[in-house]
Amino acid sequence: MDVLRPPLINVNGRIYRRNIVKEEHYEEEEDFSYMGPSESEALEEDETCDTHFIEQTDKGYRCAIDVPSVLYKYIIGKKGETRRRLEFDTKASISIPKQGIEGQIVITAAQKAAVSSAVTRVEVLVESFRKKQPFTHFLSLPLNDSKVQEGFQTFKDEVLRQCSQDHGVEESIFQNPAKLHLTIGTLALLNDAEVRKACERLQECQSFIRDITEGKPLPLEVTGIEYMNDDPAMVDVLYAKVGVKDGSDRLQVIADRLVEHFVSAGLMVREWDRVKLHGTVMNTLFRKDTTVENRGGAGKQATSEREAFDARNILKKFANYSFGEFELNTVQLSQRYSTDCTGYYSSAGSISFS
Image (cartoon, rainbow, N blue to C red; front, side, top):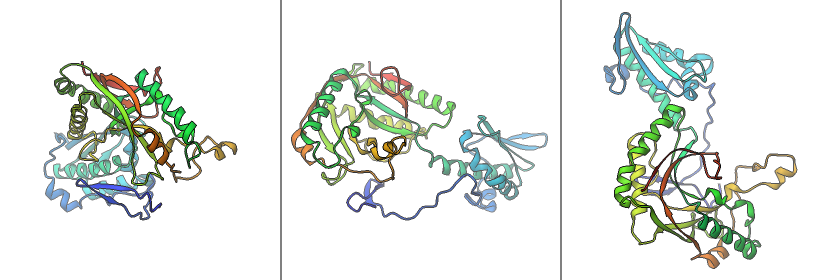
């Protein structure tokens, strides 16, 4: 761990430096059936299941749970061991679709309490490993207006002309101008049904956004730069500051309301009390490792360590740089690692301000 750039965590609104400890890396072959309440706890606490309907059948009781196929492996375990232990502990039968086929996990048993217990166990496993999935989509506010792109390109050219001698400053760490944006929040949407649900929730936000904007595009200005960490000589992310031209907090209110709506729907995890409005212009995650390329690699970094850059001169010379003004008129549910015909991220859904 770089002691000058330790990872930070947010606990109830307070920021702490995180001490690194060795973490176990679990593969799908591992057995996770120990997770969740014991059989007696599950039978006692979950006589009835509040989140899923348990129906009575001719042979007993049955409950079907929607689970993305990417999570099946955590219910099955190594050579089926996790499922067998769940079935043994709960006295229920667990039927799982074939890997890659979207469907429902069906739990059956002679006793209703057994079904409820198994449902609880499966839900604990699903939620635990859902949190480990990388995000697939994010709510974005596009900043790729032509005027802002032009201002960004000038900024990039001038930084490279005036500051390229500073440690770590080189062309590959600049953002793609076609993908300039504000990230409002990230989502791990693991199948088409979850993407549709997120699109529906986004549509629900249109009314309150139009109330805030009075049904008009929001005039924004992209002016000034700032850095993420506490040492300007060792920066990983440099971003442009974005605000409403009239000085109001309407953009902040919209961002916070969007997060609140998606968190309440269970589609997003709240990381901060308020959304940090920032348009990334330089990021060391973009850095290309030319030594890897020279060895015939794909340009991936040789190690997980990020090489920071010295931003002191950039901050001094471009502190109040104006990237441009434009009218924001859309919120998009953008797909990670994608590109549409304009060069921006592919959109799964969107709403407009006007």
